[in-house]
Length: 292
Image 1 (cartoon, rainbow, N blue to C red):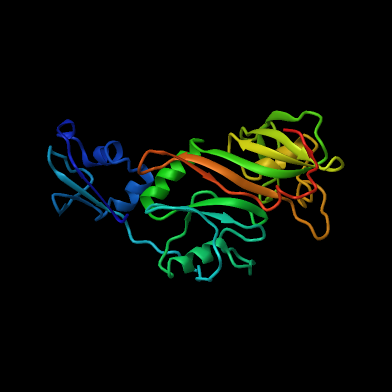
Image 2: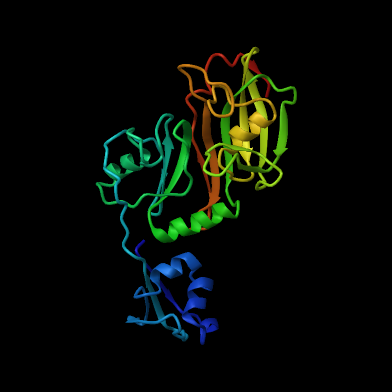
C-alpha cells in the first residue's frame, strides 16, 4: 500500500490537513514526518501541512519509497503461518537470526523473505525473536501497516503466548511474575530484575514434566521486555533449560523457547487476528507426566 486515499466528510470542513491525516486517516506523527514534504495532495495538488481541508476534498497520501539495504535474497523453505495484502507471518525456526547483523554469517529470516518476494521487499519486522527462539514473526508489507502494528504492540495490544522448557519442576504449577527488568549495566545485553527497571508481567502454567529435571510451560507475556521470559523464569529459580545466559550452559544443547500464539487487531480490516504455530519440542516423548 504505497498510496492512501480518502474523501473529506462534512465534519472535516475547515480542518487542518495535519489534523485530518491524524484523526481521519490514522497516520501517526512518525509517519507524518515522512510524508510532509511532497507526499500529501488535496484534489491532485501537492500541499503544505498548513493547508485547510474542505468537504468533498479528495485526499491523497503517497508513502515514501523505501528499500532494505544489505539484505541479500537467499532461497530457503518458509513456514508461512499467515499472509494477506498487508502482512506476512512466518514460523521462524531455531538457530536462525531474524535479520542480518555484524559478525553473523548464518542465513536470516529477512534474507529468506527477500528471496520470497524476488528481491523487492522492505523488511519491516514487528516483533523480533532471538536466534535460538523459534516461532511467529510478523512482518508488515508497507510503512502504514508497520506503523499501526508497531503502535499496537507498544500499547500492549497484542496477546502473546510462548512454550518454554524450564529447569526443574516448580512447586507452584501456575503463577504470575510481576518484577521490573533492566540491563545489568550499560552496554551489556544481559538483563536482570531491578527495582529501577521497567515493569514486566509474565504469567506461566506448567503443562507437563519429565518427572526429573525439566518442565514444559505455557507462558503469557503481558508486557514485552527484552529477554523477559528468560529473566523471569531465572528469577523464580527455574531458568530455561540450557540457557547459557541466565541458567546453565549445556554442551550441544540450546534453550527451547517458542512464540506459539499471537493475537492482535488487524490494522486495516479491524478484525481480531489469531495466529498459531506448533513448536518442534512440545511433542517430545520425554513429557511423560501431563499436569494439565
